[in-house]
Structures are given as C-alpha cells and as structure tokens.
Image (tube, rainbow, N blue to C red; front, side, top):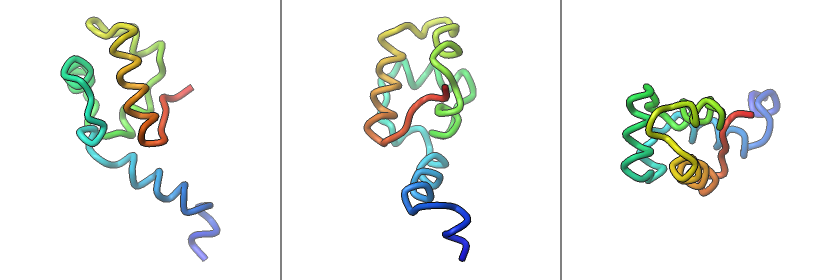
Amino acid sequence: MALDRLGSLGQIDRMAHETESMNILELGARAYNVLRKLGCRTVADICALTERELLKIHGLGRLTLNDIKGALAKEGLELRG
C-alpha cells in the first residue's frame, strides 16, 4: 500500500502542509516581505532555510527570525538544521 511507503499519516499531512502558501503562517510584515524578496513562496521554501542563512539577510534580525520560527512551530514545522 502507498501509505506504508510514505510512513504515517502525520508525515503525509506535513508534506501537504509544506506546499501551502507561506500566507498561512500569518507572519509579520517585515518577515513576510524579507522572505518574499528572498524568493520564498511556500512553507516548504521557508523550512528549507537554516537560522544562519536567514540571519545573513539584510533586514532580518533575531526578532524577525523568532517571528518566523514561532509561526512555523504553530504549524508543527521548523527550519532546516
């Protein structure tokens, strides 16, 4: 069965959730604008980034990073690494 190959239903839900627009995260304006300029369009795009990569971006500091991490955590997601 296909489900056996993919794992649990939770993994399937997470995969589907990550393809959603990043708008579902309800990020603050600064975080949203910086991520859009970076080319992020989906939750998966954001989850593919690391803290270090984000902190290198002009205009994105620790507070904005915490905003992003908090929004991802509410959805049961996190940044890479």
